Image (cartoon, rainbow, N blue to C red; front, side, top):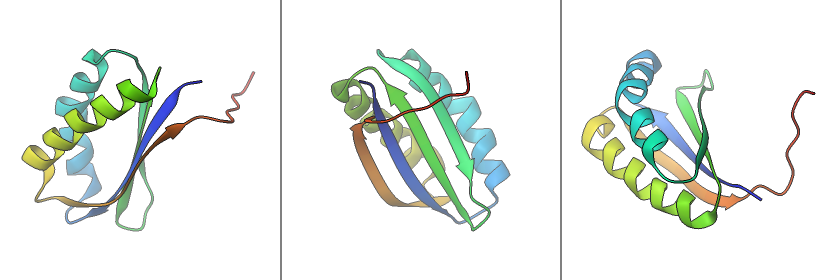
Length: 97
């Protein structure tokens, strides 16, 4: 089963600015990592963002988490605060058929 990295961030600025920077900087980094399957960034409407990335293995998810954390700290550290950070196995998934 694939693994996901889920991070919850508290915004210190507008979501649109963070989304723009993430799309231009972090997404290409994630896409180049081995085992990358998908990435979503969710605006909750409550001054927070939820980042979800899917990977083929736990090791790949954990390694990508390190890369993403470094990029976020260097490029978005003044725009948001990490609230939660998790990596885990996907034990149930459903998609529209």
